[in-house]
Amino acid sequence: MTLLEHGPEQGGLLSRSPLVDEDFDRHRFRIHRETMTSPIVLAEEMARIFDRCWLYVGHESEVRNPGDYVRRPVGGRPVFMVRGARSGQVHVFHNTCPHRGAVVCRHKSGNSKVFQCFYHAWSFDSEGALVGVPGREAYGSRLDFDALGLRPVARMESYRGFVFACFDPGVPDLVSYLAGAREHLDLIVDSADGAMEVVKGTNEYGIDANWKLLAENSLDGYHAVPTHDTYLKYLVGMGTDVSGGVTGVGLGLGNGHAVIEYTAPMGRPIAKWAPQFGEQAREDIAQLRVELVARYGEQRAARMADYNRNLLIYPNLVINDIMAVTVRTFMPLAPDRMDVTAWQLAPGDEEPQLRKRRLDAFVSFFGPAGLATPDDSEALESCQLGYTSGGVEWNDLSRGMTRETNTSIDEEHLRAFWRQWADQMGAGGREESR
Ligand code: FES
Ligand code: FE
View 1 (spheres, protein in one colour):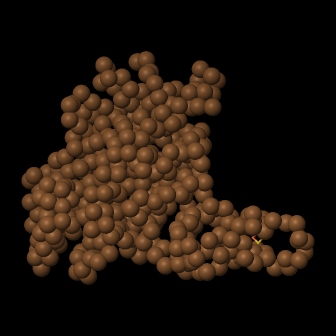
View 2 (cartoon, rainbow, N blue to C red):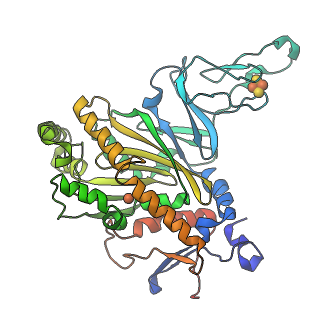
View 3 (cartoon, helix red, strand yellow):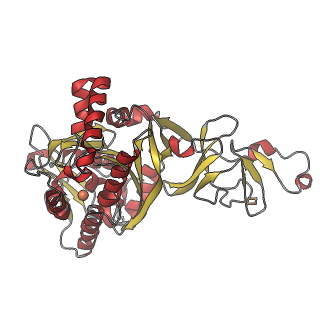
């Protein structure tokens, strides 16, 4: 069943169908607000999007040593990622005991050669094999214990250290899925000479808003000046020249992925100094730039050093490469509630003083109590509250629709996300004027 079949014509529970309405001649691209409020939409999203797309699990650097593991919710399911002690390979297992179901990996992270289920004490090694069953003789000789190991997720692949899982065995390979997003991941990873690592420590917080509002917000250059007024004033206070504003492009990258690539007054720990980093950082950062140019040439180095990028890997992974590199993923718990998890990504061999500045930026801008994220959360929760008022059915997302080049403050890259969403959900199409 598609969302269209939940529509009013079919006697379904949605008040409108289609829910994504695009009409170039009318300069119209609008999203019905039921996409943000309906439990039916969320149930369909779980089945059509989160059960079928490649979803980010974690970074290989989080499980560097044999037996290292991290427990994660991915696509609403408990899973865990572990590096096998014998093979050295990264595995992602469903976090459920093949015996009677209990969660096997109960700690958030750690190192273990054996995972013992606390219920009846079956135990599994880091490759997933069942290695211990109390009172094994009671099962006789015919039970196939080899088939009772931990179950790996249907597909697992990694790209340049980023580990993804998919619960649909028939999905195309990860690299094909990433499409144009690959180039931007490469720019981020190459800027650290290919050796990025996740810094220990996680931001975890909830937002009372639909998950797609955060996908939009992460790519939405239009909101930056009005919403983040406090941060801009802070930059001015630090002596930053903000007169150049924010300029750049917004691009759809295929398969719903999108990016904004832009220059802005903030500095970047990858080779762009700004007053917020302090005078003493000037030289270190200038040196980094010299090294980048030597490695990649002037043009690619400038793209790494001078341009920020907010990258959305559809559906729910955002990498913000700005004054810190933040990896953020989010999952719906209800139509009006999501959980957000964020990590800091950094070059493995970063100088301690640069690492410190990066972490300062991670906490003071992107952190849940930083200068930006609370503003964004407030805006998203305000939208969600606004939807309960009724009276207005559609959100407008038509900004820049007739421009030849979509800027980072237009909305074509947001429309790219929504077109993919509509395709997967069976929720697109033209709607007559009402
Ligand atoms: Fe895990 Fe019984 S449920 S050992
Ligand atoms: Fe923002």
